View 1: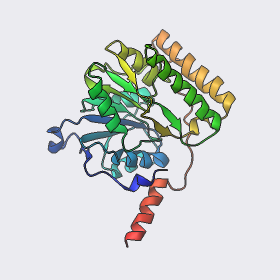
View 2 (view 1 turned 180 degrees about the horizontal axis):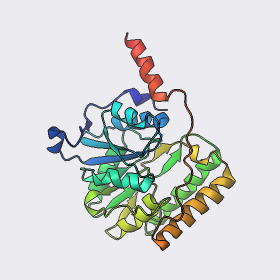
View 3 (view 1 turned 90 degrees about the horizontal axis):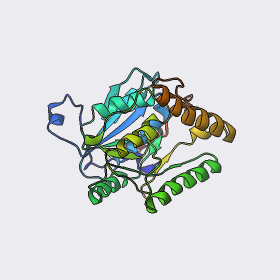
View 4 (view 1 turned 30 degrees about the vertical axis):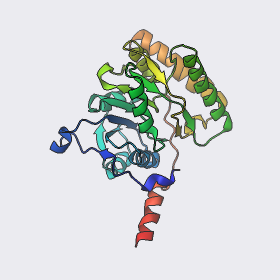
Length: 285
């Protein structure tokens, strides 16, 4: 986990709730949308990394509590970010809810089990300044733990995406944990979709509005819990059945035939960010 999770950059303006009159007068450069379903064990490290960004402008962080049964919402509120509730289960529903209320010029899609390096938003900001004609930019995502084969697959995947773009081709894939787009070109998420709706379908929609880029240098690190069921389960069930077949069927039929893959959650007696805060408080006594 990140040692910087106790540190937050005072220059990063975490905006108050939209109902606050002080917030209404500020239009942030970025709105970071984090969907969360039972993410108590991971969300603290994610938000701590977002609070530690080097970007000096105002940032709106929106956590969408997707009907969690644990302390996800309480963890989010303890970091002073905006928390909204989406009762209908599904990542597309959660991202739709968070993005619809976002006020930033650029919306950044993130995930609750992912940590972000201090220069992450700065890199996105510089990329948009250098590419004023582009509507969106993605970046790679690598596992921070787990079996080695998972990291090998990721490096092949994102290496291929980057190579095709450098050769003049279109960006063929983006990960929803590291993707930013201009709010003005967003037309919504298709909430009839499950797996792939917040990645493949969003990419398809945005490419109709303008060029989409890929920055291979601006990577993020995420939990490998999704691949802990083994190689066979991940390729046969998670990838082909839920992701590829589910996306194709739901989009073709225009209704949710196949739902989301099972949500695997690691049990943790005490999240890492809580331990660090407790140790820090002890040292200050």
